[in-house]
Length: 349
Image (tube, rainbow, N blue to C red; front, side, top):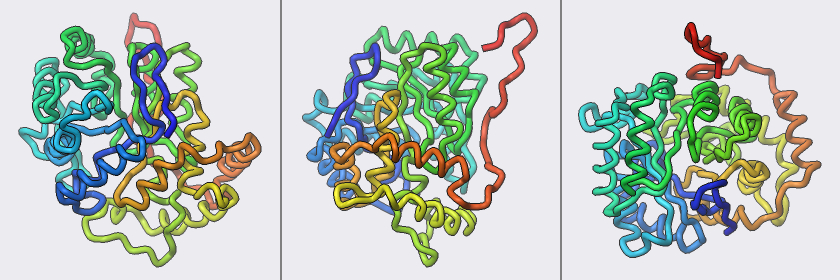
C-alpha cells in the first residue's frame, strides 16, 4: 500500500480507503456485524488505514463498527465521518426509497452530532469531519464554519471538509466552497466514466491556489468499471442499482469494452480505474465500494500495480471525448451546475 499526505495538513492516508456505506446501510447487500468487522480487519491487514463513515449510515452503525473493529488501533487508523442529516428525528438517509431525509446544519446540531459520533466511535477525536452533502446555503453560513473552527480548537476534530452528493453533480457547491472556505478535503463522485463535474472541481482548486485535496467515491461507476457486468446481470432486491434504467447497464458494458486495453497480467480493469484516479496528485485517497473479500484484496493491491502511462491516460481522454463510442444521453446532474449570480453588492466567487 502507498500513502499520501494532505497538503498543509498532518493527515496521512492510504491511497485506497474503506468506505463503510456498503457494509452498514443495506444498499449493497446485508452484512452482519461479524462480516463487516472481518472485512475491515482484512482491509487493515492489507495496509488500508482510512475508514470513511457517516453518522447516518445505518443510524450510527458505521461509526460503531469502527469502534468494534479497532478498539486498540486508534493511532494506526484515520477516521473520517460525516454529519448534517437529522437521522435522530427522521431516520436514515434515503430510508424512504431515493429521497433524502431533512438536514440540520445549525451550529448547535453540528456540535451535538459531532459529540454523538465521538461516543459511538469511542474516541476523543475525529481526524476528518465532513459536512454531509451540503448545499449553497451552508457554504455561505459563517456561523456554521465558526462552529467547525471551535470543534477543531477544542481538539474534537483535527480537520474538516465537505462531502458532495448524494447524486453526481453539485459543481458550484464544490467550487464555491473551495474558493471561499478553507477546507482540507472535498469528497465527491469521480471516475473514468463520470468525469464531470469532478475534474472542474479539481481544476478550481488549482486555479485558486488552494491546497484542498479530494476523496473520491463511486470510483467504479457503481461497479461498472470492475468489468464484470453482462447483459444478463441481475441485481438483488434492495440493491440501489435496481433504481437505474436498463440503458445504464447496456451502454455501460459497451463503454467498458472500449477500456479493456487497460487490463494486463499485472493489473485488472478495476485496479486500472483506481490508478487513473491516483494519477491526479490532487487526489488524497480513493473509496471504492467494498462488499466482498476477493474484491477488497483486488482493490487494496491496486496501489502497488503499474501506474497508467501517459499514452493510456491520453487514450482514455480521447474515448471520453467521444463518449466511448456510445450515443450520448443528456446527463442528469444535481445541485448548482451553473455559476450562481452574486447577490447585490457582493463580489462573485
